[in-house]
Image (cartoon, rainbow, N blue to C red; front, top):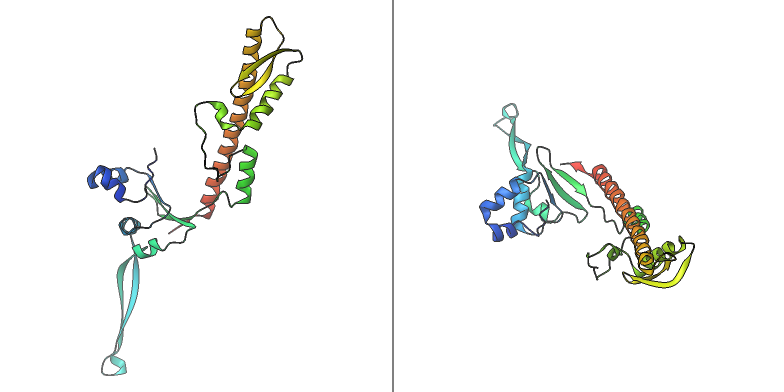
Length: 225
């Protein structure tokens, strides 16, 4: 389960501070993509912890022989809240349970040439498309041209056809010859649906490969704080 928020205070408004602390404590991974408010910045700064700073103090006496140097140690935050709010846009903070925190680089897939090629091979929609298609059926993944190509492919597999026409999910195919028009229609629709399912399976496989590549890229570009 993933919880996506704009800032920490959203959990306080919805569930209260006590429940927020419970939810956040139970999360094994916490990814802070951008930090724009002081409360979230303070939370991340506290979660990152501190490191030891050594400072030198030189004290002079009445003579040169009486001067001395002392070393002191003090704790300083690993990242101050002001530093987190001014963090570069291509950087994020990753907190992992029972591990050191990480400062990782972001990979904008629409700016990366290799990722764009994977998207094109998978037939993914443009990231700038503003109209989302409904997820009511498998064919919603495909555009009109892809549906037509799949329907044509299914019709070509049948050597003998009749003038009977079958309408199926927004495209038209010719039903193969057989015992009855009803049986022919069912066979044609089943063939087209099989092609659609295979195409969607290929898209999902390409998307999984792209996700795996993205994970490997983030792992190589991340570094512990």
